[in-house]
Length: 511
Image (cartoon, rainbow, N blue to C red; front, side):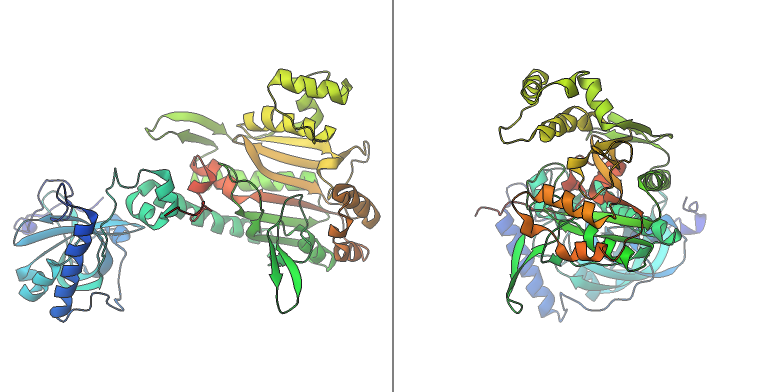
């Protein structure tokens, strides 16, 4: 809390009680074209006064929000920010400056800054960047404030800011003009600040456990590590086609072969597939590999990580998701122990006789269940489609799905008791896959057979260099992949992946 107002400050200037007001020029009926013209006229007047409207270096002592949060009177300070509110009292001017960390009230008049700088300030608008040098005080209404003694114009904004509750409510505009979204919407600012902090803590979590962070190629001559459609490009100097990676897995495993026992990479993957609430063509993925571990060890690792993040950033293991009005729409309970259940048992919960049915009967059952299928789907793909629609999308609290069919995960090790399934988990939370984890296949012959079965007629797409590396011996290991964007959706309550990606891919805007 800021210190109480003292009697010695009783003569300090006081701000009006009115709420934030826009530029004088922003009256009803004024067009955006006129506003831009007004601002350009002010720009020229600044230049006529010998002022550089796009100033240079300005050393600060505090950020606006941080100074306000830990406020003390009588400090000499230098702060800078964008003007986001202005209250014109004639000879006295109150205005708020802000950056992504918060805002702070400032005060000036001709006496405090001199008539020349006072006239310069009158040529500024909402949205302009300004540097202020002055002394802190608290008004009678206990508002932390800086009394400006010198000001410096840092950047003149030629376009008006979006109206707070009207001008940037449209989601398409928020995604396409993210910089305006960050100016206008506190919720968006907080999500992306949280994203940065959470990603930093994920790195710290793995560093504390002696995992080595590495970087592997994003341009690959054979895209591998997942079954997905890659983006294609061509390297002119080498005269060869290349692909944006769909996963870093096969290169990270080469590092296990090279003797690195704990490695992770946190970086972008690219998949030339559909766009939806849960999918963006480029997305952030963490993959980690731990020699001598297995899928059980990796399940414990990912459970520890997510619980640690929830306790650190969400205040506990129960995360409430709210709508725009603040109503709770669902609560995700991360309390331990997390449920584990086999893939087949989850399908049997939907239809006890599913695995005794013929392929044709399974297709008919899908119609009864309201799950659409396509003629080209393999039988195992039909089962997986039922799983995605009736298990995955309904799993709100954590669920480890184990013992998946071997056709779905060709890079995992077969279960020694039932070779038709592999030793894996798929972690579901918030109605979507958050992380898969495997006991990694380290038998080169078994790996080749599994990749050939997955590739079908496209045998040339098998990464022979990876098979060659495996033949030199890879230790048994566990591996995980964590979809960072989806994890952030769960932790922040964001409705769409586009709400946690600063610049999501959008369709080109039609002129």
